[in-house]
Length: 339
Ligand code: NAI
Image (tube, rainbow, N blue to C red; front, side, top):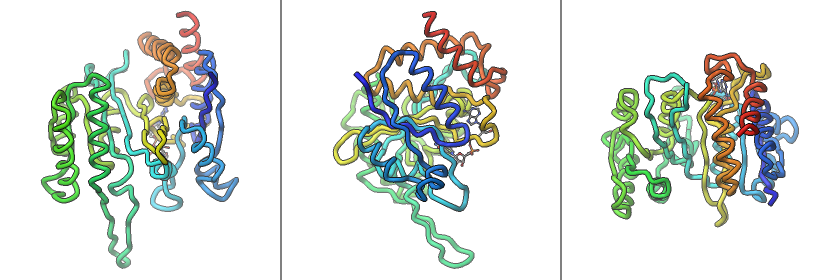
């Protein structure tokens, strides 16, 4: 069966790491018709819009997207394309697993946790007003509907993935209404899942606990901003942004939609140098292959990737080795062929 998947190669290191991932997937023999489109700066230059209709129509049709990073101007310019996409397709769950890879030196070797981040509201709703020249009013939007569905998703995820515990992280002692609503929804939903342990923690304590003893955590669920920050912290626990991956899952007009993307940004400082690490996007693509039921190919790539890490020689400079993106890509393909 040939799959139709929308491909957004992004900018910065996006095209380099996308080409690496496409080459690896192609060598598994999985048949994918990559429907490539633009988003962000490059789309703006061509169409005068960062999210052109061509791109949206392709996603509507294909329902599955592999997306490389897109630059967002900081403090000015257009709103984040990532945030726009998540909001447009109501991709309410952002799933960020963090698990040690072989041979990546980190202070801990037994991290295996998943951050499930609410992906559509909180300060990302973008409600900000200038009251006067010196005063800005920013709104943290939290709704019962979104809290309940993300907490339910976290427990469902725990069940499906044979996890034992879901921890909710909030600042409900201070944000009594907004975070209080999230916490109360968690408590309500947790009653439907007596087989999964429900645990509560304040976000500041979670930060401390994560850098002291991260293996105590299993599945974590939290509002958008905390999830954004904590999932990067967790990526750091297992080797950094270059190897972290994510899925964005949701429903649009009653149908399932999913965008798979690396966690890191467009890394303009190393763009075009053939040294970017494609592991984050590759692991996102492995999740995508599982999602479209190409399990055999997903396992094949995963196995080869783990072997290359286990040998620990042909890795990119962010992992303190000196392989190029291309050498790393070819090594994974070589491993897959020899297995
Ligand atoms: P960044 O993740 O692009 O870079 C942070 C540091 O990590 C840099 O030193 C970079 O060289 C390194 N790095 C990141 N990915 C790497 C990889 N695959 N291999 C090797 N090294 C890697 O974060 P930064 O600099 O804050 O953001 C740059 C741009 O990316 C911004 O415009 C930001 O808004 C955007 N961004 C886009 C995201 C997306 O499209 N999903 C996510 C995060 C940021």
